[in-house]
Structures are given as structure tokens and as C-alpha cells.
Image (spheres, rainbow, N blue to C red):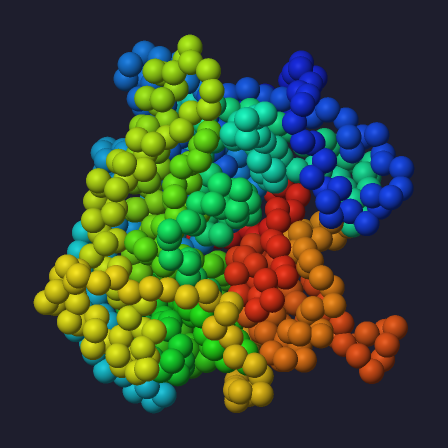
Length: 593
């Protein structure tokens, strides 16, 4: 059913009126052929769709916003058009999380979700938090703030598919396979929608036989729900200075596998988290293992992207983690069936940017509402979408005859007054408390004090730092040796990537844009040992012999491997890489993630 509106859209495209007056050639900034005659198809007017609200991203936040908008309109007998643009070929295909869902926001949005067969099939029944050493493990106190009682172990990918069905049932228009690549602006500088990227360009930005011009979606309100470190959000952060007065966002890279294990080892409802091994005490991170229904186990590892050693390889740390005796015993005899990775926001309360700009707002993980101690962000993302929708609806209905851009001031106020901010404020010092001379040990001591006694009411707020600036030079660090994959518990990187279902058409513009092509070798490789060849969980970046200069290396970008985690855009020590959207529909095709 997801494609119902898409079919109607493409079938009636010829009836739309061309839209003029907005920027329509963003690709020319990157093309190497700007000094040559431009193919007229590249500068042809795009077709335009007008809507009340356009939402970029069909994840939990975006779909929650869309559903709430339609609920409000139905309740009051009003008409409001809501369009959701999603770069994945189908809903859920680019969605990856742990995931243990706290259903608080879902209860508010769809109270009868059980009757609607929501895929929340496995309640969380038992919690365990352990400190791992190389050979053994020790139980840690599991504080009430981290309890999973009343929560559910889910596949977030499947949950998003179900949420999409609920959105369609209230007549939200969903367009999967369309990548929003550009912000559209009014003459006064306010946002008036988005444009999707052109399809059918070759690697030199020239139209192929299957070329199709992108579309303009012009809206009264634009909500960005792109997920962590969204490419359009990054643009708006700069244009509207949305980080003014806020702490830098800090990130982690989460890498995950889905396993089918032997029934005798399966513990339905078991929620396991760990700290310590294989990371050193100065590197923040940890592992998780969640036992779903039907002998399915989700296992993963998160490494904070402010790590210092350029030789650290997050993917290989995860593989090493699985060899720990406590973890390995569950996986032996089982089969890995899926793989994926994504970046996640860890900054919390003090890193939330300004949420509104003229013509729209940021919602969900694109703003950054993850509760790090809980290791959860879906419930807060959904709540942000609900609150943004309520503000957008009121603004649209009350401003139907007014001119000028809509600014959702009420959204920023409502979320500050909500349980989202209350929850994030209480735990605001936990993640940055790791930035102390004792590392993990200092963090454990402070976290216990804060969560057990201070209850988040400390009269201070710790600060964050820029992740990429934390990297030390290669000569200051030791090379890290990792065990070779055994093909049973641990795997070669490209074998894992094959389980993500990732596909990109090879003859298209590279969506990983290196601004200065000399920097990767002259600075990143020679000073930092080429960290991009290690931090990428998909093998996109590698340094190979330069055929034109055999004594030198060059950076090769295998963009077809990209799983859209955006780690390169975050961790690149020179901030020389921009992740932009590839053709709509390309990328991973996650299952059970």
C-alpha cells in the first residue's frame, strides 16, 4: 500500500504546472563540467507540488508528525494535505536501531496500537548490565532510570513499516524512493519546501537516457526528520545559525547484527548491556544484546566518535566483542542474517539546537533527543514529531489568510515544557562525565552519584567537545591488532555489508563529496594514518596505490558500499567530506533491524 500515492503521483505528472523562480541546479556546484555547454534538460523547470506540510524522512518522528496532523484535521473536520518524502525504496529499509521501545509516545499517538497489530510482540522481561574484562564479566547495578519494565524488544524497521500503514490509513501521502536533496527558499529567505534530486545522471553529472528531473514540493511548513546528522539539516544549521548558544553535538557509531540462534540458548525478553572490553578506559562505548521472539537476537556495539586513537576500527571492535566468552556462548551454533550501521546523537539536552526556523522545524534524531543512559530515542523522537505537528496544525489553520512565513515558536515552547526535556535534563551530565582523567572509572563513579543521589538536580551542566577534534596523530598512538575473522562468529567487513542489502547504481555522481582531494593523503594519511579507512563500517574508503604515481597513495571511494551512516561526515579529522543523498531508492535494504 505504500506505493499507492507514488503511482498516482507519477501517473499524473504531466498535469502539473512548471514551477519557476527557485534554485533548480544544485548539482552544478559539484560538477566538473560547468565550463562546458549545459544540457538543457539539467536547467529545465521542475514540476511543482503544493502541500500544507512536507516532511522529509519516514521514520518514527516524521510518521508520528504526519499521523498527528491528520488526526487533528479529522477531529475538527478540516482539510490538510501532508506529504512525506523518504529516500529509501520502501519504508523501513533505511531504519536501524537496537531496539527496545518505550511505548510512552506511541500510547499518546495511537492508544489502540495493540488492536491494530503493532509489531510489539516481545515484552522486555529481564535486564542485565555488566562490566566486561577480557576473559570475564561483573554485574553492575541496574538503576531504576535504566529499567525496561513495560518496554518491548522490536525491529524498528518493521515498526516503521507498520507506522507507515497507520499514516496511509489517515490519508497521509508517502513517497518512498524520492531523495530530498535541496531546501527551497522564498525571496525573504524563509523555507518554502524541498526539492528531490535529479535521477539518471552519470558520474560526470551528465543526463543518461533514463534521466528524470527532480520535483519541487512547496509547503507552508517543512519538517525535517532526516535522522542523525541529516544533510539538509546541516545546511539549515549554518544558514539560520541554529547551534548558536548550544554545545556541539557529539555522536556514536552503532553497528548491529541480527542473529537466529539455537532455541536452547534463546531467552525471550532478555535485555543485556555492557561496558568495558574491548574498548580501553578512555574510549566511551558499549555493547547490547536483545532477545526477540522466534529465536532472534539483536546484537550490537556502539563506539563514541570522540575516540582518540586513529587506529581504532569500530567494526573490528564489534567483531572482537562477539568473541568475549559471555557473548560468544549465545551465538555459537547460530546464524547471522542481517547487518547494518548508523550514527547516533549522544549530546543530549545541552546539544539540542534551536528547533525552529522561518517556514519549518527540526524533529526526531535530526535534532538529537536520544537518552544515552537509557539507550533509547524512538519515544522522544515520536513525541517531538507529535508536538511539532500540533504547532504546525494550529499555525496553518489560524494563518490561512495571513501572508509571510510560519514560524513554529509554539513547538519549541511545547517541547521545552514536555516530558522530553524533563527526561533529558535529568541525565544531561552522564555522557560528558566520561570526559575526565579517569575515563570509564570516573564516569561510573559520577553516574552512580548523579543518578542515585543528585537525581539530575546538580547545579552544573558539563560540556561537550567536537568529535573530530579529539583524534590524535598516528605517531602519538599505538597500532591496534585485531583478530582475523573466523567466518563463524566474526566476519570480513564486505561479507557483513552484503547482509545489509546495500545497492547503489555505480554510474551516478558520487554522493560522498571530498572538498579538497589533496587533503586525504597529505594530511589524513600522512599525519593521522588514514582513519577514514577504519571508521567507515562499510569499507567505502581505502588508500590504494596511485597508478599515476606508484610511490604515492590515493583515496579510493567505494560509494556503492555506503550504508548511509554518515560517520565520515562527522569523524573526518579535516572536515573535508560531505555526505549528500544519492539517487532515491539506493542504499541499504535492512530487514529485522
